[in-house]
Length: 520
Image (tube, rainbow, N blue to C red):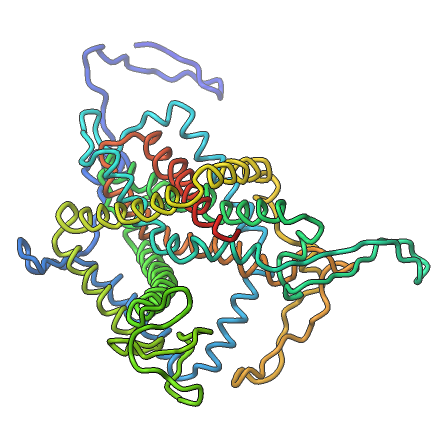
């Protein structure tokens, strides 16, 4: 035997093992964590109910997540329908609370994640593949990007393509600044003139000339739809794709928390994550669908009435005193009811929602390659036809000049605006409320906020635009991120980041640069 001295000074006898002898296993305390790692899917087993396997109505769902989601969603809906005034006040207060308390977190976290994503793309981790080393992609890069893009931003681009740059630019706001010594303190004081509302962001651009304000308007639009917006999609899609295709974990939102919680994602924690992701998806889709349906309703009315150059041509004419004259007529005169009699109201919009839902359901039933993919190709092709038609039928070189100028402005201004929280514009704004929520009787207690000279953006602008946008993008994250992971099998992490972050940003610049120049 061999003798060895331990830390206490005593000598213990150790029996040497033969070199070819296998190490003994501790059967009483097996390494459960290592055993789980050797199992397919890391040993994660979720309860599922499966109905109609191999049939068009094949269903597979988690009963706990589905049941809790239904209860939570209908609780929200019933409360809103039963007490609309109180619900309106409650949601407005929550919206203001998020803007008041969490603006710093929204802005800072986006930039931190952007740094993490670029680090992964530029280092060795960018070579990681969604699947095995021999896994081949299911779609070409054009098909892949088309599905990514139509899933991520299609409705928003059509709705805001002209509207957002135009909105940021349209109001003319001028400022004059001088020295004020009346109160004994020498400071700058300003006067504001123009048509913009006092709470509008154009207060910040009041010192600019028209050309600078146009660049600023496009830059702000690029910021809302550019690289920062796509961060939630890339983050969730990359994490879910790697864990699902390389580790065999289920493709649900709870999988993203496996590195933190391990097998605990099987329990109530994972259920809560999945329920919250379903609710976020519902609210995000409702926001986009609500905006898109209103636009479709307006467009159908223009087609029905033959409204070209602001004049209606088809259908019987409404008189000025006719109660059937609706807001969809706008300022056109004469105002006609059209061939089909469509109008801008909830009934028409409900029918549009039903049609869109039926079309989307059919695409899902047909499957990924025959349904969703084909619908994405058609939508992407129609969008390309529209944007290129506008580009080449208008003053092409002028649009390209302005696009390059505004894009450079965006790159130059990005380090500043990416961290902008409008802290000084929101100074002394506590957002406390008084009055009844019904009939417009609710108001804020404090209307005096901002900097002493009254210049800069209004207190509501940042929460109503940038913070709202980040919340909107994040709410779509679970849905879009899961879909991007689903269609990205066989791609490397570097490819995924380029095609889901950088290329969409360039395309958004192209889209808004083309349509946004109509504000001229």
